[in-house]
Image (cartoon, rainbow, N blue to C red; front, side, top):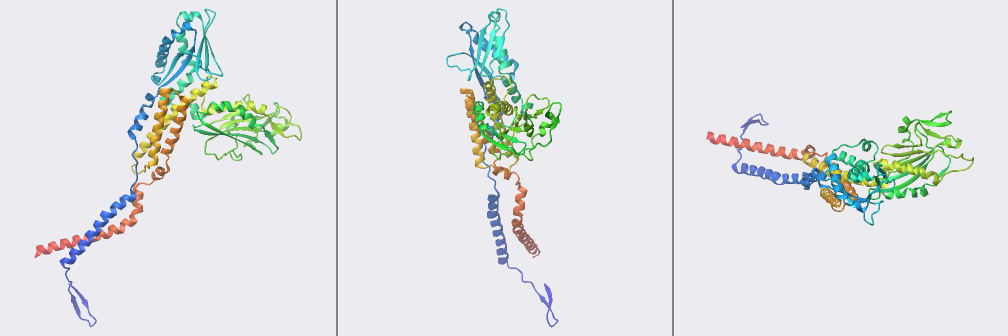
Length: 518
C-alpha cells in the first residue's frame, strides 16, 4: 500500500491490486514460450550459421602411407652385362654377391634399391640402358681398369685372366657398380631416408617445380647497340633440355637491356691491362635494384646472364680474380658470364655476338643448369646423371607429397575450428591416388620417367590441398571471434529473458511464502 498527496492537500492511500492467478499464469506462459522459441529456434540457427564444414579426410591411410613409403617402394635397376658366353655362369653368383655387398654396406637400401644383372640381348641401347662391358686383358697379370663413357650409360671393365681364374670378377663388378657408377645416387638416397639434406641441396639447388622459365639476358653496360644470335645458338642446347622433359617443362625467354651498370665499380689493373672483379664481390654483382630481371612469370625462373662491359670498346677485358673463365654461379638464381670480345671492335660498327661465340657460353650455362637442378657431378655422362636425378627427385616428390598430407592432417586435428572443404578432400584423395600409381609404376614396370611425371602431379595437388584458400582464411577465425560477432545480437535477447525469468522466480517464491503464511 502507498500514499499519494492530492491537489487539495489530502493524502490518499493507493492500494495495489494483486495480480490474478490467470494473469500471472499468462505472463509466465509468454516468458516460457519466448524462451523456448529462442532456445528451440535461435540456438539451431546460431549453430547452423556458425557451423564449420569439415570433410572427412582419410587420416589412417595418409599416416600409413607416410610411415611405410620407404618399405613400399622397390627400385630395381637393370644392368646388362656384355660378356663372353663362357662367363654367363658368373651372372647368378655375381647377382648374389652384389646384393650382399649393397645390403651389408647400406642396410637402409635393403628391399628398397637394388641392381638387376642381366645378360645383354639384341636391342639394348647404351644410350638408354645401363651396360657393363667386360673385356679380357691379354696381359694375364694386368690390373683391372674401368672406363666410364662420358656420353652414354656404358661402362667398360677390363679384367685379366688371373682375375677370372680367381673368381674375383663378381667382386670387382660389385665394387665398380656400387662405388663408382651408382655412388652418388646411393649416397643421396641414404641421406634422404635418414632425413639428412646435403649442403648442395640447401645452398645451390633451386626448389623443384614441374615448370621452369629459363631467362637468357644480355646486359650491356652502355647504350650502344649489341646484337646476339641467341635464338640460333639455343638450338644447340635443346638436346640437353630434351633429356629432362620427363623431369620438368622448360619455357625459354630472351631479353636485351642497356645501361646496366654494376652496383660496385670494377677496379682497373694497369699491370694486367684489365678490370679485376674480386671473387668476394660476385655475390653483389647483380644489381637487382636497377636491372629489370623480374619476368613476372608464375613459374620459377632460372636466369642466365651475359654481361657486355663497356671496356670491350677499349679492348680491355674484365677478369674474375682466381677464376679461369668469366663465369660464376649465383645460388638458387642462375649463372653469369662476363663477355670479353676477343677481336677489337671497329669504330662505327655495331657489335654482334655470333652463334660460334655463344655456343661455349651456352655449354657453361648448361653445366650451371645441371648444378642448379641438383644433378650429380659424377659420373660425367649426362644420361647417367639425368637418370640419377630422376630417381632421386621421384622419391623426394613422393616423400614431400605425403609430408604435405600428413601436415594437413595434423593441422586439422589441432585446430578443430578450421574448415575442411570438399575441394581439399578431393585434392587429398587425388594425391593419394597418384602416389599409389607412381609406386605401382616403380615396382611393377620400373618406369621411372612416367613415375616422375605422376609424382610431380601428386606434389602439385598436395600443395593445393595444404594451401587451400578456404582453409587458410578459417585458420585465423577461432571461437572467440564468433562470440565477438554474435554478442551484440545475443546480449539484449538473453538479458531480457534473464530479467523476466528472475521476476517470475521472485513472484513464485513470494506466492509460496504467502501460502505458508495463510
